[in-house]
Image (cartoon, rainbow, N blue to C red):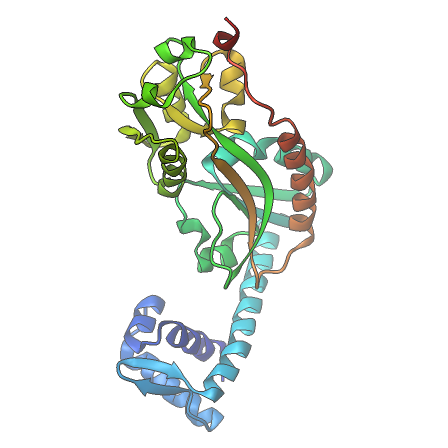
Length: 311
């Protein structure tokens, strides 16, 4: 029995299909099948039952699967550690976050962390969609992730680290910013500008508006939150953006918050890691620091005031 056989066995068990396992590992199907028959001969037991077109683990196969999973995880950890040493880095911290969180919240945490731990090399990946939080990527490529969604609990550990809320915003020249408070009827003809790929966030806002009898008119769908903010700042449409992500624009007068009585839509932020990936000392230290910084942000999440609201 060797790691190559265990890797093939693990893939077959996960996919329940020899052909899909072969495709996943870039191997031929006959080779995969031959390796599994050889492994079964060496162990003296049957590892898979054939159920219709599926390869289903036997009781012996389930026992081996647990050990194979742990051995492959150790192999991944060893490769990760060796890669870090080869690059001259004592320790590497792999982070991932949604764009809004990465742009607005994490920079201060990263700067403070690097001042305290200069020997740790921080790598931050940003995303818009959920795909980076799929199981294989979370296990292999991320120590900590920060996002407004929860991956499946079957493989991910999540901790709510902060709770913000969406704010309706418009550009300073928009006619609705002249009103101290807007009413549901004011939004009927207004186009809403959305961020592409953030369908779950869009649904949350739409449900909150629906509770007030508002069916928002869809306008542009743009590539990133930053582009949305710039388009809205030019006076085109309305956007729903988390409070922490528009504070700078509101303070500078580039965006104005709109007060719609009864509108409330939460934007939770979760810290996410894979259950099987150890919490290395650098990741644990960063998480402690992130909790402190995010608690400070949450404590300052007071309502944003538009200059026009007092005029």
